[in-house]
Image (cartoon, rainbow, N blue to C red):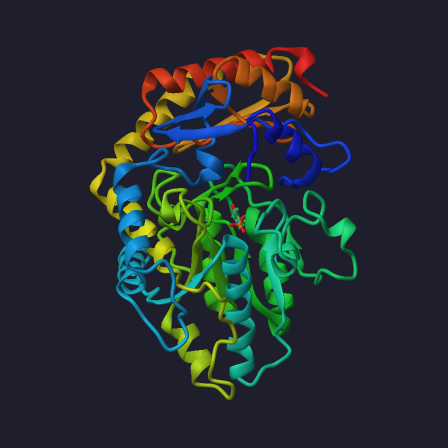
Length: 432
Ligand SMILES: *Cc1c(COP(=O)(O)O)cnc(C)c1O
């Protein structure tokens, strides 16, 4: 098929959905032709320094030779084979690596094809656990406000009911229980009043609860909120007290982003079920995983049904597993902690002064995540264009202008990103 360069954005506009967009009034899109290191190259030849890591995922930058060659080698051996009745080295090696990195005791691995699916699998594990225990009424989840867990129907039910899409899907999405947004903020001293509402809900509803699900320490797409690890520790204690399972969704936070390998490590907490995705393949292929401990796996398998009822066509895709193995090897062999710490210090230095601006409500930094929360919604298209004109790729979302760059970004490149951010939020005309 012949597609002249000029027709690509035009054809796109007419025929392709993008995330959360209208087909009648689509937002502008920029055509990217290649990406290397921390730079995206546009069709017109311009280069943009990437502040988004393609939504948390490209932690080593783009087209890293080690991941590219692992994918090429695996593609020539076996791009895919069904996982029913078959196993292969890439999947086994990946499970071994994940078990090694994850908090202790999570040694049963389900390979899923996207983050949302890994959350569906986690929820299904929790339901099936209680079914197998002979307590079928435990079908609800307890979560907190401000969460984001994915776009499939099961996952949507535990996303923040206001910020998420519940108003559009009332009667379709299951109604779960919501405690207030976790407090206090990261770094603020703990006091027991912060857990009272959560404690009341979990104790009152134990008989109908399958699990608690939350994003540990950093809530991502639900508002980029960083909360005290002490909250997470108390949640673990309350789950132990009541017997309710704990699901940690580390799809955004996993693999070093917050300054710990997993955000649970801030609290020294081990969940019963752990979801990972996003950075798992270094941003190259879609892959996620749901890890469980033996209480969960033995609970399911020792019961009446015995089997976990899930099995995607592309489960354990060898190509994606090979990419993940290469990415995880790069990560553990790299000085990722120092890199993340340096990014954190620089973001703090260069973004904190924005807090003085009248357009800015708050500036928050944790690990390699920098957030400017504005006082009102940005004009997404105008601000996006402003960033492209300054040679950086930052995609604002509502009132948030935020970055989570690849860990390999240099101080100079990061400065270009933070300078553009500071300039953008100072301009009234870039707000809706
Ligand atoms: C992105 C995300 C998901 C969903 O992952 P997809 O791969 O987009 O389906 C779930 N939970 C969290 C915390 C996420 O950040």
